[in-house]
Length: 335
Ligand SMILES: [Zn+2]
Ligand SMILES: [Zn+2]
Image 1 (tube, rainbow, N blue to C red):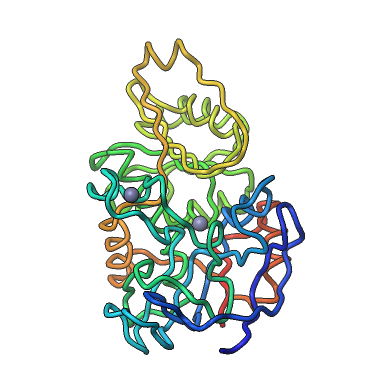
Image 2: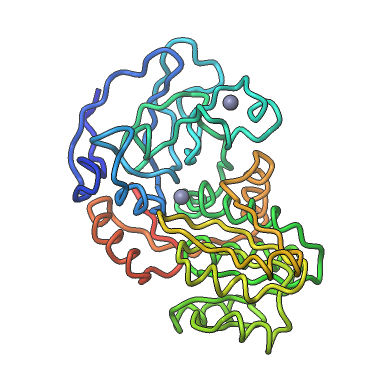
C-alpha cells in the first residue's frame, strides 16, 4: 500500500498540518480510492476547533471526488475506475426509523468523514464502500467536489424553507454555501436577498443575481424597510449576530432556517416567535434526492460552483483565511 500525504489534525485544537500517513489494505466491504479533488469546508474549521474529538489524529475533509483503485472482499457495488463522491455522511445503521424513512442523516449511529473517520483531504483513502455516492463522470472533479457538502447542504436548506416561486428568501453568508444557495434559490424562482460582512462578497452576490444585498450590521431592518421582509431567512454562518438579524428580517409566519454551526447559543425572542408565527428549524445536509438534484443541475449548467484550486500543502493556510472570511466561493484541493 502507498503512503499518502494527508491534512491531519493531530489532536483536539491542534495545528492542522500536511503529513504522510500509512494506509492499510482495504478490508471487507472497503475500497481504496485515489482522490481527484476535495473542497475545504467551514465544518473542517469547526472540527479543528472542538474541545474533544472522536478520533485523533484525524484526516480532515468531506467533499471528495475520487476514483476507485482497488476493492476489498465483498464489495459488489464498485469496481476499479468508478468515479465516486465522499460526503460528510459516511455510515449509518440502516435499520432505525430515521434510516428507513430517508432521513439517515439524523441516524444516531452515523459516522462522518473528517470527524469520526478519516476524511478526504488525502491523496489516497480507504473507505467503506457503502459510504460512497455515484457522481457524474463528465464534469471536472473540482466543480463536483463542492456539491458533496456545500451544494447538497444548500439544496437541503432551500427545500426545508419550503417556499413557492415568487416568494422571498434571504441568504446570510455568501461563502462556499451561500454562493450555491443563491443559484439554487434563483433556479427555484425565488426573489433573493444576500447578507454578508464583506462588501466584495455583496458585490459578487449582486453580479450573481441577488435582487437585494445588505451589510451584516442592521441587515434585518434594511431587509424589512427596503425589501419588505422575507418568507425565509437561511443562516449559513454560525454567528449569533447573523441569526438575530435573520430573525428580524422575517415577515410574519416566516421561517428561520439554521445551517451554520458553532458552539455558541442564540436567544430566541419569545414574543415575536409566537405572535408572528415564526418557524425555526435546523437543516443538516440533505436527502439523497437533494444530492441527485444538485448533480443534475450542475450537469445542466444551472449550478456552477465558483472554485479556486490549490495544492494539498496550502490547506492549513486556506483554513486560516477561511476563519477570517477571506475566501470567495469554494477553495478546492486538486490532486
Ligand atoms: Zn462541509
Ligand atoms: Zn440509523
